[in-house]
Every structure is written in C-alpha cells, then in structure tokens.
Image 1 (cartoon, rainbow, N blue to C red):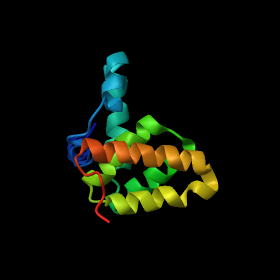
Image 2: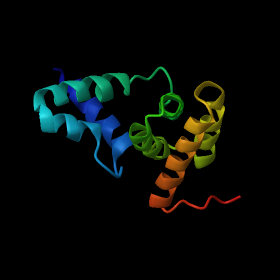
Image 3: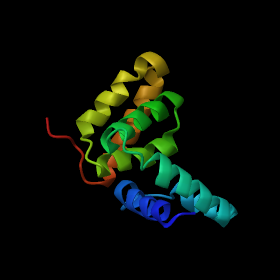
Image 4: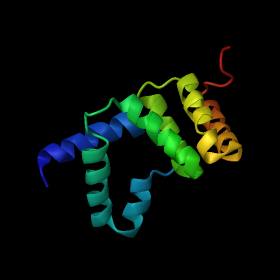
Length: 130
C-alpha cells in the first residue's frame, strides 16, 4: 500500500464526507472487518473517487443519478451531502434527480427529492430561495 494512496484517500474522504450526518459505509464495514474496510476505502475513495478524469461535482451528480434510479436512498443521502460538499447547488442536484424519472420512474424521483429535502433541512438550507 503506497503512502500516496493513503494520502489521496484521506484528502478525498475529507472533501466528500466531512460533516456528513449518519453512519458512513466505512464505519459499517469496519465494525465487521477492519482490514477489508481499509482495503475498500483505499480503493473506492483513494483510487476511484480520487481519479481526475472528471471533476468531483460531475462525479457526484452521476452518483446521485445512479442511486436515484436504483432507489438506494440511504446511500443517496450520503452522496447528496457529498455533492453539496464539493460545490453542487441544490438546484443542480434537483435537476439531476428530475432527469432520472424517464429511467427510474416518478416514484424513485419523488423518493430522491424527499431525501434531498431532508438533507437540505438538516443543513439549514431549506426552503430553497426561489
């Protein structure tokens, strides 16, 4: 394991997840297997999320879209917070969610928007300025 990957993991984890409410996946993994948790974190956060092929904002909007279509609301909540942390606006996130209804259906879109509203309420960013 290179020190460079460890440092990238720390940097990206702080960028995405600092101040995030709720249990983070790493904490859950660690409770069951700390070595595997480390390996997963180093790969997912230190290698995949740290790639510089697309900006972090774009990466998080893609993640929001995928999690919306899959109706993975707990993971979506985590990545909505990460999207806001990397500079996505609530309006950009909402538009990304709206764009998924053709593929995931309106129930998935509505559930994702409710999750976004909850995150914004928790961050003191609701109601949105019109």
